[in-house]
Image: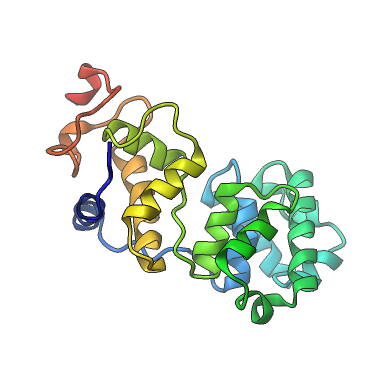
Length: 224
């Protein structure tokens, strides 16, 4: 199905009316966004936030302090596989320092930044796009699992579509404006968590119900 700019804007606006502005990303600084993008991998934001707070308590929310931390895995234990994520944070921080920090990195093109991020161990497309969108304010669509779930049920994509194809399809229809993708990503997360659940979506309460064909949703669940 072709996604038109008008249809994408309507999806965005329906969700915005239902949930209101989300004010994402929940971080105190752009550098915290880099850290949070790694820590939230395969866990909840609540757990990632606990790890960030521990780093804040340790006065370790800068790249040099993270690299010098005596027990980085222990500090971020709340975020899940702490040894793996500690190494990913170190890799990201080494790149950040070597590149000259935000002052230098903001001069790079989006394509160049994305390529550099994807070359880092542990940084996949979704994490790279989160960093680009929220830390660098680049117009990137974050095609996370929530987006796939909602847009498949909405009839815009099929089960064979991969990350890059979905990202490009949405960006082809959307404006070249980071605030739009910021809000769209946050609204899709809010909708998936409150209504469009993985197993028992509450379709009767859905802000998209009048336009959603509910593809793949069992009738019993759709009526709840």
